[in-house]
Image 1 (cartoon, rainbow, N blue to C red):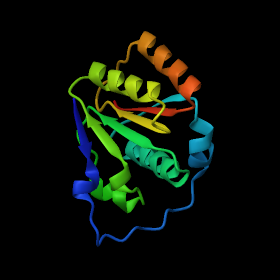
Image 2: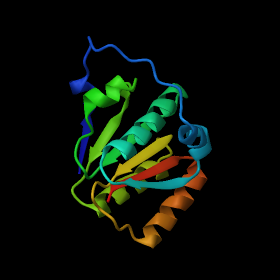
Image 3: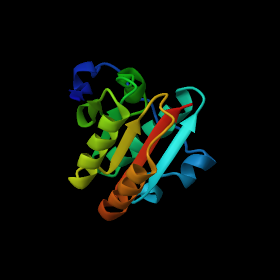
Image 4: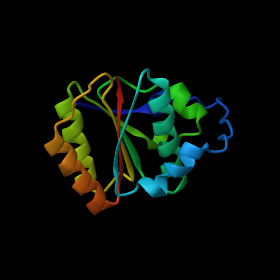
Length: 153
């Protein structure tokens, strides 16, 4: 497991784009509505789930919450996140090698009550044990954390 800071990839001269108005789905899935919940989001391809997660991270930063990105799929594209208005200097990224490590890292982050949003990017992994999901749901409820599990199937 490795903790990365994306501020090394921060581009001082990159202009932040205005965030587009939310779609109907994004209105239903806003940061405040997801607090205390565990949501699994999957799609065919990376773009859809990454965009939804980036929106949640941006909203969390705007609300003063601390988002954490945990990735088994690799480092998220810093340019894309920054273009969405996300402050890379305030986004810790934890890179893991296995799904079990990703879930364990998410559990530790939620137990510490540090993260307002925890994004777990599992890549092509399609299976998460039900017992672990149940434990993470209870943690999300207890700590009022929005937990997003992303997968590309």
